[in-house]
Length: 408
Image (cartoon, rainbow, N blue to C red; front, side, top):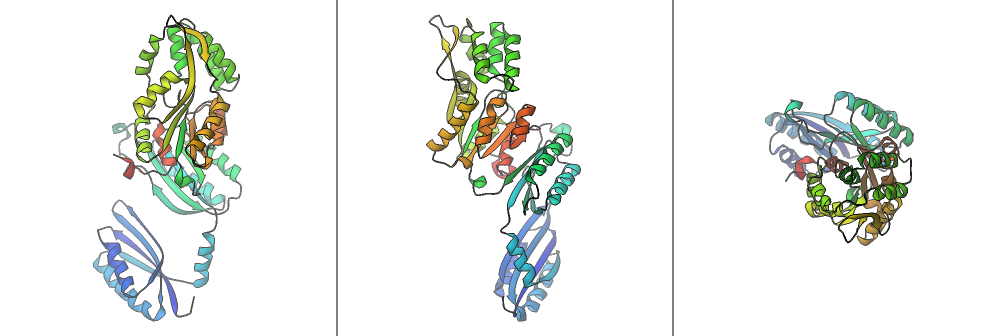
C-alpha cells in the first residue's frame, strides 16, 4: 500500500433512522474511497455502524470534515481512527484462522450465561467477532409467554487451545445454568445442510408408541421396563425389541388408529417442519418404532421418508407378536442416513440427525450435525450437540435460522 494512502476507521452511534448508511457512504463515494470492511447493528433503535475505508491522504481531511458535518445533521456521534498498514495486514492474516459458531438458547438468556460463555471462549484463545440475536424479542413477563425462547449466536475466530476441554466446559455450564449450547465449525457445509433425519418416539412425539400399545394389551409395566433398559443402553436393541413385540400378541390392530390420532406431538414440530419444507430440506423419520405411526406423521407433517418396523398382523386382525423384515436398530439408522444422502446426492457433512436414545447414537455420530434432543444422559454426553430446554424447533437456531425470516 503506497504512502499516499490512508486507512480510516469510523464508528457511528446514535438513534437509528432510515437513510443514515446511504448518506454517509455517499460522501465516501464522491471521493472514490474504497470500503475495506463494514458492519452495522441496531439494538432497540440505536445504531452502531463501523466502516474501514481507504482513500488518498490528500483527500482524507475533506472526507472527515464532511462526515463530521453530516453526522451532526443526522444527530449521531462519530469517532475516527487512523489504522496503520501493519495493523490492517495483521487483521487480514487473522481471517485465515478457524471460525466457529457458538449458539446459546433457552427459555431466557441471562447475563450470567453470556458472561460464562464469553469467558470460556476467551480462555481458549478465541476472539468474538459478532454477536447476533436469532430469536424475536423476549417478553418482559415470562408468565405471559411460558413457551418463549431466547437464542444468541456468537461468531468466533482463532485456534482453539483445547477443543475437548472447551466442549466439556460448555456442557457443564449448560447443565449448571439451565440452557443449551452448540459449537460448530463454520464451514461451507454448515451453510448448506440439506437432509435432516429424526427419531420418532420421544423425539417427534412425547411418548414411546410401543408403551402405548402395551398399555392396551395389558402389559404396560413389563414393556416399559424393557424399553427404559434399552434406551439406557443396558441391553441390545434387537433383543429388547423382539421381547417387547412378543408381548403385544393378540392386540387388535384397530387400536393403532386411535393411538395415532391422539399422539402427543412434541413442542415445535409443526413450526420446524413448515420452515424446513419451505427452505428445501429433505426430511426423514428413522425409527425403531413402527411404520404405521411414522406414516401417520408423514401424512400430517409432510416428511419425505419413513423407515421403521412393521408389525405382523394375523388373518384375525390381531398382532401375532412377530415383526416383518429387518429391525431398524441403531446400526440400521446409520446405514439409512448414508443411503438417503446418496439418494439425494449430497455430502454426508450436509446431513443432520436428531434423536434421544442410545440406538440413535450411531446416526448422530455419522451425521454432519448430530443433535441429542431431550436425551438420556448417556446420549447427551456422547452427542456433538444437544437441546434440552426448549422445543424441537430449537434445531432451526443451530442451523442459523432467525425468527425474523422464519415466521410465516
